[in-house]
Image (cartoon, rainbow, N blue to C red; front, side):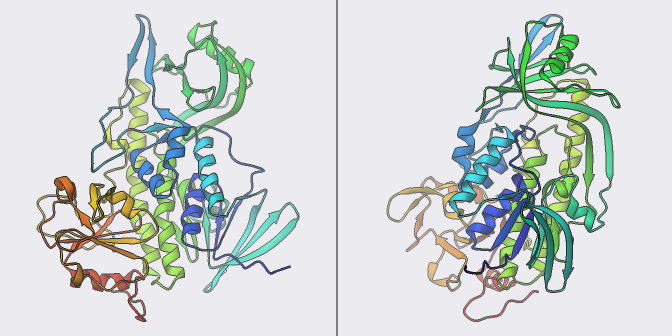
Length: 502
């Protein structure tokens, strides 16, 4: 039999973050091993909100359409009060714009999101290995040795890096003795995916809002189930059978016409807000819930984890291809402050939800998160319009020189960097190099800014250049001399030049 090559990266945990990282590495031709100690895929709805920024990530990864088709928009929330039912929107809706094509959060049960990601990974020729438990990690200057208990016995696998995407109780984090400070938020809840009779699918039904006896049933679009949620006392055994959840529901609502007839998945958990002291120790890194855990309010946890992995994938690939190690160090420098801010938002939303109805708007979309203070960002002085370096790169419709319409997001899609020149001299651009796509408008440009959307979205003047990272953030709005010097520092080498770091 041919020898199977050792992977360059081991990913421990095949949830949304681990699958996102695997897809990104797969499309970059990086060898990896994706393992999970569970016997099979997670089958619960827990992280059901997909925020607009994550939708952009999923478009780049080639999976957005099947994720949208798997779920739907959030339904109206129907509050049952003494005066009768009251319908209110849970989301402050706004339509898509040329700069922001995704504005509305999606409701997609987590198990369906992860199914879509596994399908995409399979298209790229890979699959998670379930029933494979990481039991030990040793590392040295050259790599990591992982001991893995498999259905056929223990094996040791050597790789350049290991990534812990193994959830809030992460074995990887604990094995590295990385602190996980934070606090328990004083809320214990039951969440379950149920089939129920006597309740409609046109609304997210809520009883006892703002009390300790509240309970809700949210239709899980793409399935015939509802997500059942309610706070429960600490130190009390909760019966999560169909009969037990029905009894709890009847006790709290007085509605005996609604009956839980089947429970597909259930969990009783205490809400926490925690953040790892560090995201990296040597050649081992943390991502997703292994690095931060959130209360479910605002739908931030899964989304933050997906975007962690999206940030990490291209950096791991670049360093494995010879880029300098400080590029990988920027992962924690960029993502840990984001998690800290998002944790604060989730906690504020939880406190508000304890006492009153709150409608969620742009603050949960994650479209405004960025990396202005990152070492990978070249500061942009003297700009009075348009985005700054470190911010999310906007979309815009453009027309190719051949006459067909396209979008900047379509040009960004893939594992490459993108250099955009507005009304710029294409012949003055840096030399073509692996991993960099160059597009210009103007004479002999391959794009036409039909309608001026590119100009308006970026606030550009003629002759200006924008460098966009593989993860869709602006690295620089600068002159070509500055950009060309920057490219070598992130592993985009011209000719035989060796990488360096400023």
